[in-house]
Length: 246
Image 1 (cartoon, rainbow, N blue to C red):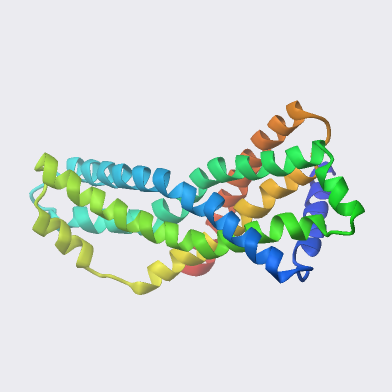
Image 2 (image 1 turned 135 degrees about the vertical axis):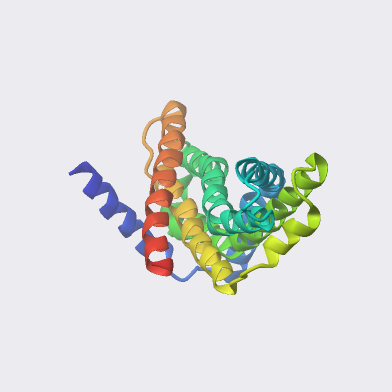
């Protein structure tokens, strides 16, 4: 019953989050700040992981496609499909859930245990709307660009791996990338990303906003938020894949 109670509180929280901001100027300022904190500061780790994972996918595919009956351009095709369909939207979202989710929970949780949220509520401010809505909007609008960057760098990393190792030629890899390209797969990945971005912004906010205790409880809430955000992303990934590609 505890899980159902938490789910109910979560959806009640969303009802408070999606109310009209009291001051648009304050919301705009908070939005730009959250874009920097949640998005721009994550570009480095996204670029690093995307490039090298793309290279690993290409190398592993090349090592498993060693039959003379299998054309080499399938390496580029398999790398492209793997990165666009799963790695960029899902794997990067789980990584961001760890990096961004812990930040959101700890920042809001610290405000809760230091009674800053209580002070906002005493002044008549909708604390959930003030703290969470800019994070949701920033994540949903900016994370698709991060995923597009991850797609590009992942595929580029696959090409670079072939160039440096000599396992496959650049022409074969590029031919595989260009073969059977469906723009809908990009839209599918971006739709998943926007749903995952919503989860990354709201689930950690829930754990941070309703934390009780002191700094030790804030740390535990950060761990719980990362775990549950990852679980929700994996479950939603299954259902979205079934609905959008099934």
